[in-house]
Image (cartoon, rainbow, N blue to C red; front, side):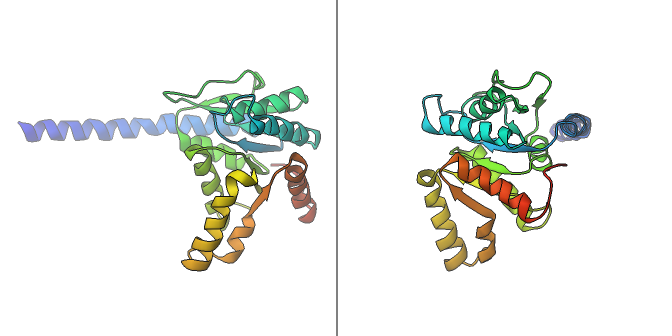
Length: 229
């Protein structure tokens, strides 16, 4: 009897997994259909917990405004904190403001600065991350937690392994990121040799909005590329 119950539970789980593929597919189709119409954008990542009075919230707004002034739209995770700041800066500057929202038990809710026709909702992190990578011409990474680090290291890995074309990855805030950069250089590179020295060059560390935007502009000028899909 117990064996029959176990087998029934296992078969039900396999059936649910099979049907889940349709939900997953729908998220990819929805994302591709809507994001492909938006145009060149830069993604801004960072903590959902930072408040408007935080200096990095203000800096994210400033960076987003300058990104828009340079002909790009802005993509964020659609929630509060740094995500809100990125959408706010883009919105107030009259540019494209995209939010890729994710269903979470806490923290996540749509911020009011996303363009009404550019707010996308996801249940699966992996589908959402594909949209960030596929439709961004650069990553601006502000101070954040595990989610921010997840997005950062996935992008580095995909570029390192040549699964995607190289694009600028910019860490904003020396006081926040310098410890990580020192560890990457001293431990991953020089002590354990788990990365190549040139992998470090995939990351740029800056403190100002002008530096961040300049890196993006210089990258596309250097490779004679236009920022498009």
